Each structure stands twice: as structure tokens, then as C-alpha cells.
Image (cartoon, rainbow, N blue to C red; front, side, top):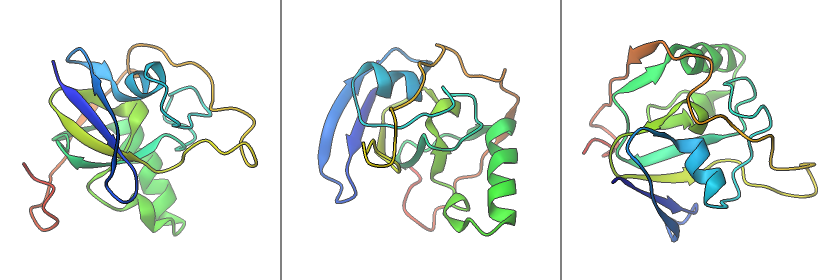
Length: 140
């Protein structure tokens, strides 16, 4: 079974989570009580569940994530223009991975962490190839 290692911005390990292969990353993070924000409930609409995958970057991404990121990039949100940045709600955990959560819960700015999420990826995924360049050292 894959292990998801959650690290903070200093790469300090916060939690190690063992999950069934194929588990939606957001579901695993919620079920194991991380501080991930997920305002839309995991439907690729709000981008609050954004993570950086430092190890185990997937070689596929959903069209829903791709389209959402393209809109954000078009309007100048360059943080979405990186091959290791994903929406946790659009990632199926297939192998070990190390992730950092981009937006963690803060009671000053968030009313709640978000709605519960379904077990499967929503909307129904249309998978696109995701090339992982070797220039950042994220390729296994």
C-alpha cells in the first residue's frame, strides 16, 4: 500500500499516511486529519486543495485540473504553472508520494476546512498525460 508523506514548507515530516492504491489524495488527507482546505468539496472548482508533490509526481492529470489551471495562469496566477502542483481532489494515489499542502486551515480566513468529499475523483476524470521534467529533481 502506498505511503503519503505530508511535509511542511521546510520539508519537515508532519504525517505519514498509508492508503489503499487508487485512493483520492484529498480523501486521504481529510480522513487522516490534515489541515487541508477544500472549500468546494473536491470538485476541481475552487483550487484550495492545491498541493505540491515533491516525490512521486503523477504522470497523468485530469482535464478538469488542466482547464482550471490554464484559466488561473491566463489571469496571472503563476503558482499554478508548475509540473509538481496538483489539486489533491484530482490525484489518485498509485505510489508513495511526498506532498506539501499549499493552503492550510486558518480560522481567521476560513469558516471551515470545507465540505466532505466523495471517494472517487469528480467530475468523472478525463485523463491527460502529464510530462514530469527532470530539471527540478521531482522525477523519481
